[in-house]
Image (cartoon, rainbow, N blue to C red; front, side, top):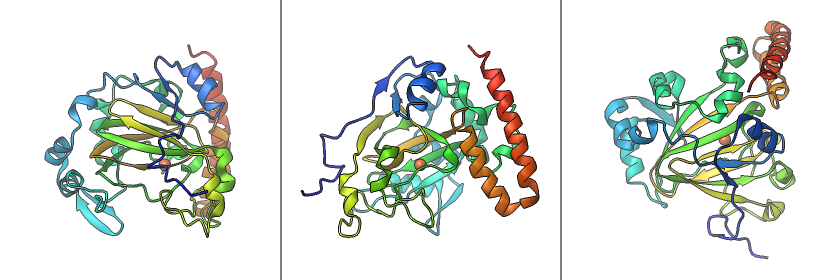
Length: 295
Ligand SMILES: [Fe+2]
């Protein structure tokens, strides 16, 4: 059977779209059942939805520099490139910026808090800095037509992911964790697939990839996709796009997060690894107790 690129295949299943999801429902129906969901009403009152445009970033933050594939671009240059990007000559990507480091004031544009904030331990004042060190919590992506995330991957540290489309649109290609046997995880980096182009995969080299079941979902401004840990994913922008990504840590991925973080400590700061793990277990127990009383 000929391989149909997921870009051209309009028969692929999408992701369920929902409104009014409570924190409890998010955990029980989506996180614990490993189901992704698109929330359509969670950011409608954010100032970001009116303020964040390519022009806004060019005018306000144009001089900030960022490196993509060894080349440095200012935000002003990236905005120019993304506005004139084509499928054949896409703007540099991923052009991703850590909001906490580059423009922490933008967090104020992401109010009121969403359903995710209620369950996210990463954002809690109770979260010890040591445990969250190095984890990117808020990330901004600037992309143009044809910008394609170059790696089909699973996000690190067992973190769940939510991505909000603030401007333009973006297409998500998602594969459930049970599709991993068709993903050809790289031996040296098992969270990365060796299949480097899902639109034109090398099926001689990766024949099983033809069996992988893809979910395709376009996000428009105001949509937020949530997918639990273990989902393989990549994206393509059909037009200039601004999206905001966030990692999510809750009781369901706490132990996985600790395990992965512990491995990092063992390599970088072996003396700290055991005490940090102990702090992690105590903190997890405290969070669980507190969350029992959350509405
Ligand atoms: Fe990702």
